[in-house]
Length: 189
Image 1 (cartoon, helix red, strand yellow):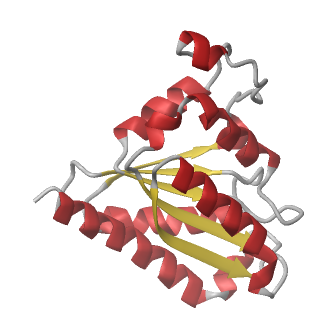
Image 2 (image 1 turned 60 degrees about the vertical axis):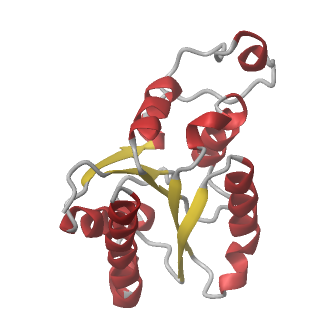
Image 3 (image 1 turned 120 degrees about the vertical axis):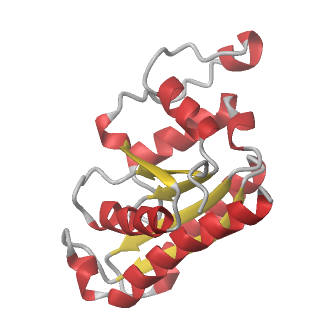
């Protein structure tokens, strides 16, 4: 077991005890079972301002804002794997998650080479409901040169804790965390 492997969970749901947070917790539990050090943050508890498209990041090399994004970028830099979760809100991510993603415009290099696990719970029972969000995230992380190693979809959940009725999804989430650590261990051999 490699305690040097760091896994960061970033919850994009405004609900701190909702299905997104619970699924990320399960992924992190699986990673911890394999010896990784895990950390979890909630975007709704951070002060991250929306991108102004002012290009200061491109001109001066740093963002015009001095908010919580800088600390979060440091945490991402120090992590080997990032577990990113957002429920589907009107066929896309939450506002908190979209704001977070938009800020990578000036911080593209931070995600380069990172392994990503994506967690997406949503109310509708049809997996097609998540297709726009999944497509957006695939394109985004390809542009950021990060590698998505797993996508966990959880259809049919709305009320906080409802994911408990879907043990197969919880098992998949834990397995994704364990597998991510195993992949990282093999990369470091």
